[in-house]
Amino acid sequence: MEEEGEEEAKGGTRAKAVGAALAAATAAASALAFAAIADVARAGVSPEKQAEMQETGACLLQNCGRELAACVTDEKCAEDLVCLQGCFGREDEGDCQIRCGDLYASQAVATFNTCAVTEKSCVAQRKDDGKYPVPPFDALADGFTVDTMVKEKRWYIVAGLNKDFDVFDCQEHFFDKGEDGKMYIKINWRVNRPNGQFYERNDVQSFYQEPDGKAILHNNGNVMLHYQDDWYIPAYKEGEWVYIYYRGTNDAWDGYGGATVYATTPDLKPEWIPDLEAASKKVGVDWNDFVITDNSCKPAPELKIIAPTDLDTLADDAVAVEKDLEKEVQLVERTVEDDVREVRNFFGRELNTLEEKIEQLERGLVNSGPGRPAGFMTEDRKRSEMNSRERRQIDRFSRRLDRMQDDFRQYGDLDVK
Image (tube, rainbow, N blue to C red; front, side, top):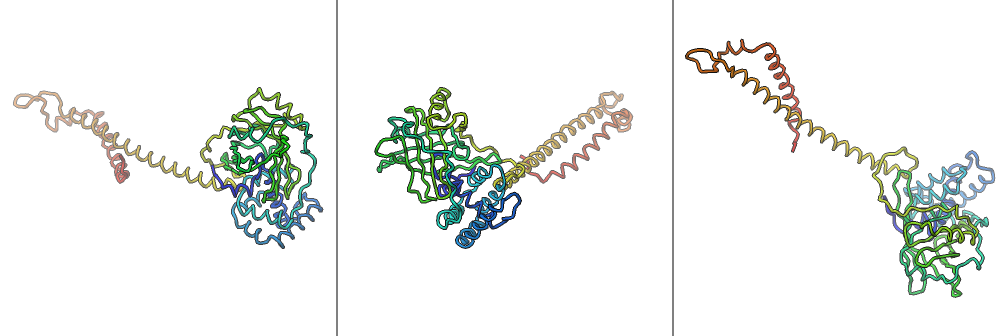
């Protein structure tokens, strides 16, 4: 798991309470920039698109050259450019670009996109396609205020409509009310990575409600891409859940949107679904298009080597390799220690067995006659009493002892405890 600072997260992922709309803006800028500069003649790109890329590239080189140079020398920004280059021509090109923006966040990314999109307008704004219209006022809930959420303090996003902006793991948000009457939100979410790891992201947002008391919350006046978000609340259940439909605009994209369900518990309860279905109809969306989120906030799994799918996992692969090597070294050390102990134990057992055998043979337990103590045997008698099988045993034991002594000398320098 990696945690990146608030400023970095704002620059490359999302700068809004319920989604990742700014990721689309930053991705669009970076994608057009890199394609225009690197390879405008790639297969599958229409002449009109190539002309747009060339125009964008010329604008960037003329007006944002310093920011672009800083980007290509910044690790995350350069990875973002490479990632975005691979999105062109794909059926899910827009989703791919947003995903790149989620993964690769840094101040260099934010600075480059501010120049490309906001300051120099090198990237044309994506126009509103009407997918997320403003809902009618009679669709809004009665009695909702910022205090409805502030008094509960902690909420979770348990379901989301827009898979690019709303569906992340571990979306735990904290609400408070400022002296200015605005609702302030500390939002947290995770960006899952291809290798099973994740980035921790966070941001702070503020919303206000119009004096007329309608169930609409506004977030505007932002510097980053001049983004503005409006929340529309068609339904809620006090202390349990709030349904939020939103739409927004920024310098790169006008008319993005989605919907989320906030709950005071990490999981969506099945008994809420009929009311959530009804709320969805009020704002013209289908509840069946929602995705249930995972707020279990599991710890990061152990790093493992995977087949590289993108630049984002290569550094983790290096760490995983290092850990695997450490494990192998430890395993070898333990194996050597165990082998030495086994040699010592075996050496002792075999030596004892041999000594007992020789002692038994030398005792003889025979009476040699008058004038000789019981059990006494001459050397000739001893040799004659040893049968061939016993001599072979002794010879075999002797050879084994020789081998064990050689092995023991080989391991003798190890400090085994």
